[in-house]
Image (cartoon, rainbow, N blue to C red; front, side, top):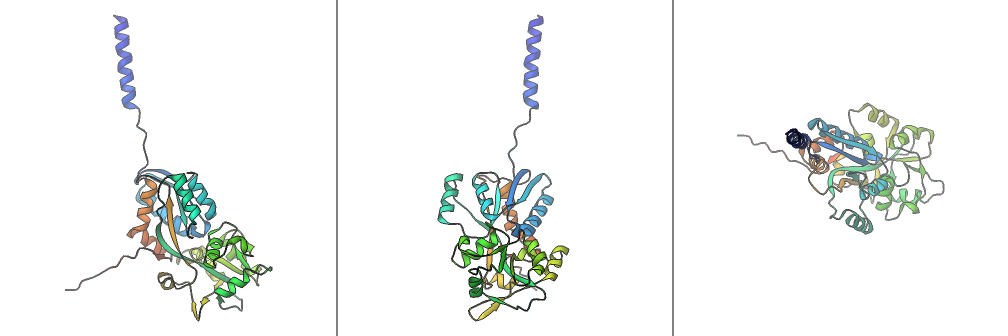
Amino acid sequence: MKIKILAALIILFTVWSCKKKPARLVDSPQQGAISMEVDDSFRSVSEALVQRYMALYPKTEINLTYKKEDLAFLDLLEKKVRVIVMSRELSDREKQAFKDKIDMEIQPAPFAADAVVFIVPKNSPRESISVEEIRQLLQSPEKPIIFDGTNSSNLNFVAQKLKTSPEALQYSIISGNSNIANQLEDFPNKIGTVSLNTLSRPYNAEAQKLRDAVKILPVTEGNKSYQPAVQNLASMSYPFTRVLYFLTNERYFGLGNGFIRFSCTQLGQIVVAKEGLQPYNIFRREVQMR
């Protein structure tokens, strides 16, 4: 009798334990945690989008870290991160590597127009620069143009615009977009390259300080000169305008795709506009008067 009672208790305890054991949760757009990597050039807009998304969905956690654009792409292939931001076009080899490693078609999700801008110290006599002059200066052994490092989005994009490779260019390095703007006064004969997003946030004290320290050069192409202003990003007339887009290796509609969808729809595009960048998806507002 005692054996039968003991056996019954064991069965009841096992059933109760199974019922109490929590099921393994797969992340969703409303909950979970993922990692995301972005180049330092896109730091401000990425932070703003992530903070806004997590405020809307408090049960989500997007761990944002900063890595050079090329290295972030490699981490995406190795599934070390769920989402990255890119600005240059992928090569055919990179597209094939994505398909082979992730086993899905690549689906870029554009969300903003940014730009590579050329800056000099505030007291510099230089007032503009041309695309052809940039090409020539990047062949000079004096390395008068400063980038924020190898494998960086700014260097990659300029090389792609000039139809060459980063390895073929001559340039100096100061690590970090903000550091270039802060230290440029120490190099009066140099020209810095930073992302527009580093300087564009209109009401941010740090961005305002950087804008006050440098002069943004208009870029001449053909017979016209263009400032990296929002209207010139919208028309893609500023020569070094670039489209920022998300890539993900997420095969289902989880937190990564949820964040990407948010960033590309109206709420996210409002965040992009507040960053001083051009939203990629423009929402028209029509008011009917009766």
